[in-house]
Length: 451
Image 1 (tube, rainbow, N blue to C red):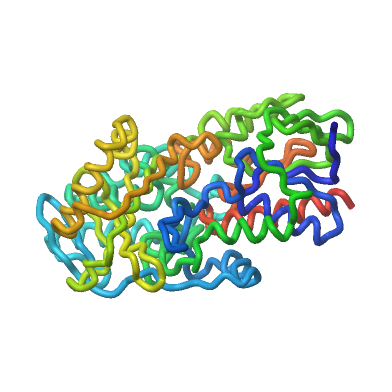
Image 2: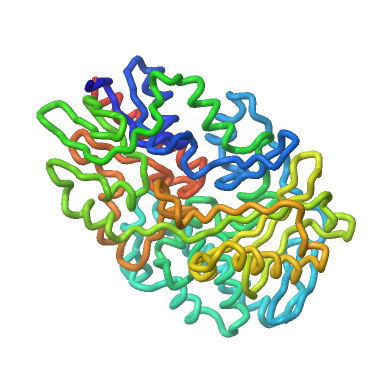
């Protein structure tokens, strides 16, 4: 049987659930169509025993992420600080060292080089309009080059270029050559600054959610109810006939007056549309891949690194994981090291068998924290590259000439079809906060259209 509502929402992540919440509050009827057997999209918890969890997807909140923190507060979900007490570890050019604060102990000339490059990047980022990056005065110039090309031009040392590459992997789950310089500038401005995106205390990784970030989506969906949120309802086709829009799904057919698609452009492009989407929107979806990341969690009986004066944060230029955080529960037991495998290394290890991949990750943890890291009591991983209903993480990558050629199509409606999702948010693009903002924007627009 065909079911009807004023508005259909494709996707049960934070963007879709937020849009549904706002539309229901405005008196509209809504149906959320989610492909998975769970809500949350790119956020998901993993049980590790004794009622404790680790987050296998998006997990952090930081200063300025007001919409995310407000939603969590409304749901009664508390935050706690990411463990950031002690020395950080840097393994660089075959040498391991530890340092406090934000400045590692490496060659002063390399530090000066990277400092100049980052200062230039931060200054340029402020010149990119968040609502329309393609209108920046130098948009064509920046969009025509990769972040890698820009880094080569504006750094004098291989060490500085490697540190910028590590930053790109940590923020985008991609290589500098994958990214338009305009996209890097926009993304940095969207989150406040590039430094804020890579910092822990005072930055985007400052806080975590008690019980895991997936609780936010689960509790919000619980408020909406099973009559609104339909799981296992992957949308395969969207058709528009007169003033009616119809979604064909694995769970049946649904009709509405408007539809909000919150899937990232890559996945939105795999839906069949009738009539066809405008050419620039269709072309955009062909040029919008997702980042490459495998999120790994090594669980130990205790956070042994803390007793050694380390905060559990590490980065380096070797194989395996190049970005590591202490991801232990609020009470510090058990100890958990979160190891990200990103960019080219995620692509390489993603082609290996799970045992080889695990050994590579544990070898990198030993490189940072010593032999105690070699034998965890538990180990979990999630390769987001293989997730059918995400296509990758953390978010959409804009390569050269995408923003300037197709940027307006990212949010421009196609008749009754509207677009949301974190990729469409001018503020905190790519983050959970951006997803919520996009849902609020789309709901307000659709509500106004319906009169």
